[in-house]
Amino acid sequence: MCISLYPELDAEALLGKGVTGLGASALLFANNDEVWPEFTGRDLQSLFPGSEFLELAVDGATIPNVEWQLQRVRDVDARIVTLTIGGNDLLEAFATSRTDREMRKNVDGIMSDYEKLVAAIRDATPHATMILTTVYDPTDGTGRLPGIDAVLPVDYLHEFNALVRDIAHRTTSSCFADVHSHFLGHGITASPDARWYWPQSIIEPSMRGASEIRRLWLDALELAPGT
Image 1 (cartoon, rainbow, N blue to C red):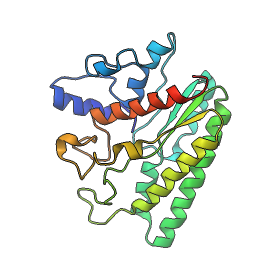
Image 2: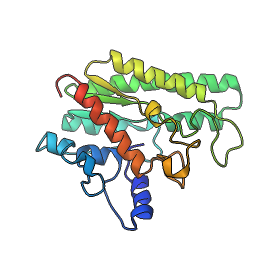
Image 3: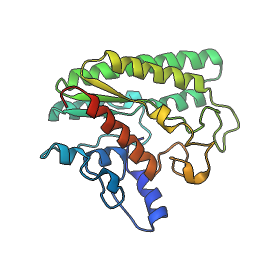
Image 4: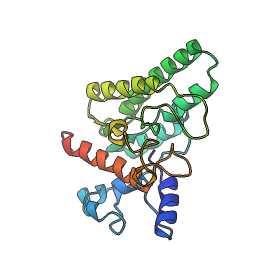
């Protein structure tokens, strides 16, 4: 949800040239004023001169994969941490669960692992403001994705996102970005020019989608005490 790869591929197709630094995390730190003039001066580099950017997100990551990232943020004494994870875990559970009971067990494990991860990040970054982010739904609630005959059980996604909201509200120095709600209507049910997902793979954010995630993070930080 936050790496630059897919937004940059989208930009190359739309703008006819290569542009770097267009992922949500990259834009949060340093806006591209040529592509997104609306956000000129609204980035961490402008708001907090001298700050540095450490991008630790990895394409396809799942919750059990983030041990090395925890060590990195611990080493640098991070002050703002964004967390976008859970979508790949849920897709993997859907692909590998043979029964409803197995799916339920896998989702329960994902939710438990997420809560433990947030606690570990809080422990590793005692001075940081964490932005906990819901997972978007490119099916727009339909459960339908191109190339997949089965209907995805989106109720599990709603359950996971409710957990993200709850944890954000009860975790010290945390704020909440509801990407799921913000993106509804910009997925499979929208016309192609109104979608916020990369056309080649609708589970990835487009150039516009990355900017919209960044928008919510900035809004969340503006409401967070002490930032």
